[in-house]
Image 1 (cartoon, one colour):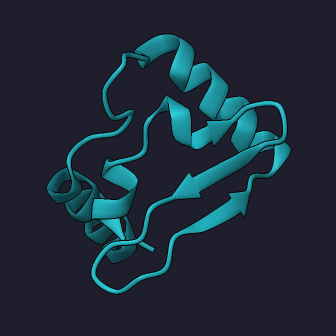
Image 2 (tube, one colour; image 1 turned 90 degrees about the vertical axis):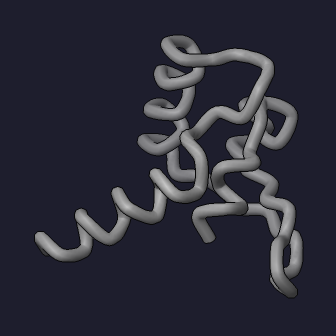
Length: 74
């Protein structure tokens, strides 16, 4: 869910083992994802470019709009 992704911070990412932990929202269970090496490389680049101590990604509304826009063109 966009809200869950918007709340991800650096403490939720294990760069050594390529794991991303997501805290569940609205009845969703918290879960951990194993990231592919290419995804991990992009995430490391993104962190280096845009990292701060807050959430890594835009707010949930912006993420949802971007997803709907990308889905409409595919």
